[in-house]
Image (cartoon, rainbow over all chains, first blue to last red):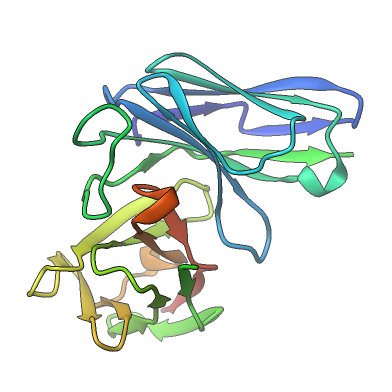
Length: 122
Length: 116
């Protein structure tokens, strides 16, 4: 039990479907993240939320839409995906030191990850 | 741009032996943080160990130690007395300054298999 729960664990969807991934953290953290993990590629950061505010969007296509209604919940809304979007989507949270949205490279606070959602787009 | 390199796609080690997983990085920054994560087949990333760029001593956490050589820009993970449960993917990650300040950048990972 990592304190970060992702649902569903597995998802198969057609290219015209709309679905949502859910992430919930029970650790009282103030930052949450979405990562994409594709085969043979490094983990890619998609979105960052600090204190419920989106602070990073790493050039992610608009067919991925994040939502953070409160500091414990994070959603990733999916629509009109492509087969190359098939991957493991990992949610993470961390407690960031310092002011809102200001983090330093030396911040030792590790990110806690969920078990991921294995997404297959057919 | 910053880059993390893990040159070993796969490694085998005999149970109870030590193993070193390599990680090198490329940055001109002086301030950065180094992390290692373990990812078992179940999918979640499990934090193992952290080292700051100004830490003078190598970090240790139980059977894990980080062999930090700043001049060579390497941050190898050493696992002592390997156990069957250590079989997993291992990722080196770093926090850099600049535009993505505070976020983690990951290497491609090394798959470790522990043989009985």
